[in-house]
Length: 462
Image (tube, rainbow, N blue to C red):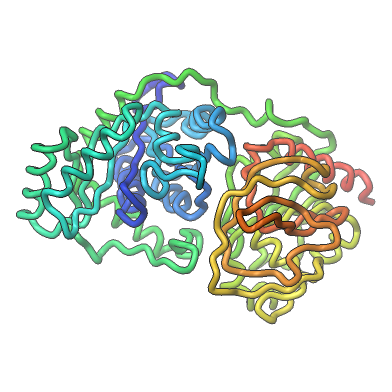
């Protein structure tokens, strides 16, 4: 193992010209291949994605971290990266969409290119080589020259049909782009990561299958790319002029160590690691539990956090666990603070796809064919355990369900869309429930607020 200075983490950004080129296969495989060499690999993902980091975590054996310049602010990207990469020999950052695709209408903000510049990291472009030969040089040349501040330092070819096809692609790139080819992956049906309506199936749901998929990706990349050249390239990344993010400096700690139960497992697998870290730094005892299996909330629960996931796929199991549903409803009736987003919102409602849920909120939800997706700049419309009215922060929507009604007597958030203003969610006294996903590192005051609400409730427990 190397003994590197903390601020000089070797790093690479894995990008692509567009979605669907194979970034996740290459990034996850690269993480697995480097870990198999005995290196400590820190995995990261640009953007608000929850699913890819699950595969990264399986490959690396440490949490996958998100780097989102819209949700957390550009100034926090390098500190969050250094926090996540502490003790690592190398960091791999998987991009989002195409290299230069960012928040809609906001230029480069939150794009892979933006994050690469903030991290001063070399970029490796994954190019889908199918259905082209010499044209690949024009494509790579364009990406390499578009923004001089982005250091496009290598190409990995994907979905290459044959030795002859690879030769043609390599010759074109050598002649016309000046960007070295660092690997070529053949078209393969052996490596499969099944997907559904919101992307890949989360690793937590697939267990042995997910482990095999990660191992297969690692073997494919190890046999197809020049790992030594990639490591040398990663080591050219300069030191970052930043200090690691520290949750304890972001929040106000409360006394009493209130116990906050955090839903997890296959039905509620969407979360950012920093959220729990901020809760802990704010003085809470964070206790994970799985609503698919737990018969009640953990003893002495003083706060409940239910994040995103796929409850619609486990609706029968969640509905069938009537004991836990009653436990949650009783906790809410006693004034226990609850923060729920997306899947958590559906779970707290009366019903989901016709089956009973917790009944904390007077709303029913169902699956639809319509995808609601995008960044939001929101303002809290009413006081809640997360934030006082008037708080402004940034979030992200990503769902194919609808709640009827979509807002309560006291809506949680308001924001503006091109189609006009929108109010959404439920913020009544002790409960905050909304479709909006929040990265608490971008608004650490919500962790302080929730921990304080849990401490107040805990102090009143018999």
